[in-house]
Image 1 (cartoon, rainbow, N blue to C red):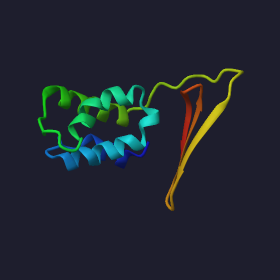
Image 2 (cartoon, rainbow, N blue to C red):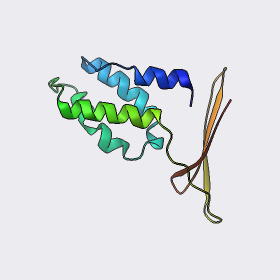
Image 3 (cartoon, helix red, strand yellow):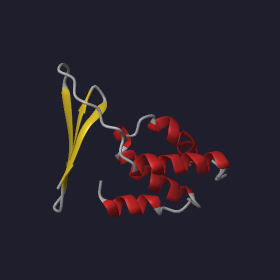
Image 4 (cartoon, rainbow, N blue to C red):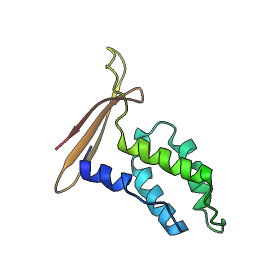
Length: 114
């Protein structure tokens, strides 16, 4: 995990508008497959970001926001691969870096980044 990205997420301030919530959910949604229970954690924020929904930031919304930030900035516990079963590799590349995640049966086995 890139320390600069972790710092950016950790320092993300509380949303004060629907646009800011959508921006945060866009970032978080990119990594949703690596956050267990993502949809249930983000459900209150998703409802708040809907078109025409009143913007009422509650304590539950704040708790959901903080829990999502923690899930995005901490590494899950890695598991040992089993002898059987298919592997899945997720890759993301740009001009300045490459990141990969090796998974088996929906569980993270290993990370790699350059």
